[in-house]
Image (cartoon, rainbow, N blue to C red; front, top):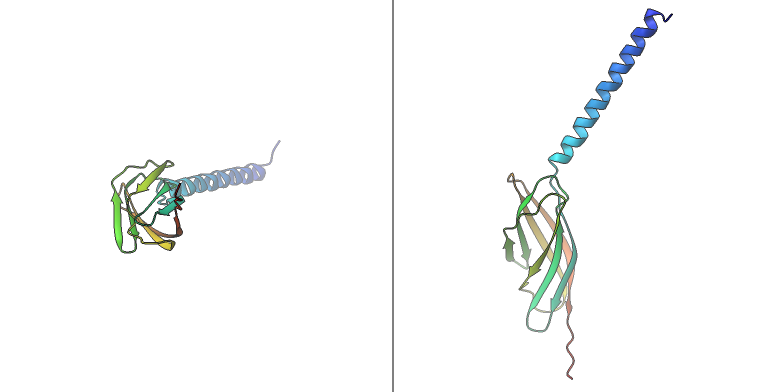
Length: 135
C-alpha cells in the first residue's frame, strides 16, 4: 500500500507539471498568433541607361494578413493594396525606381497588417546595369 504522503506528493507534482505545460503552451502559441513580421528577398533591380525597375518577393512570416505594402526609394514612394495571407509569399514588380544609374540603394518597406499594425524595415540592394550590345 502506498503511504498518504507519497500520494499527496505525486498529486502535487502532477498538477504542477500540468499547469507548467498549459502555461507554456498558451504563452508560446499566443505569441505566434499575433506575430507581425515579414521578409523581403530575391531583390533584383535593373537599370538600362534610361530607366530603372525591379522585382522583389515579400514573405508574410507573421500571424496576421498583410493588406498594404509601401516601398520608398530615394524619397519616391510606391504602394500596393494587396492582401498577403499569413505564411504566403508574393512577388512585386516595381515599374520605376526613380534611380538613375547603377549602385547601392536603400529600400524602406512599410507594411500594414489587417488589424492596423505597421512594421517598417530597411534593406540594402544594388542596381545592376543591363548591357545591350549592338548586333
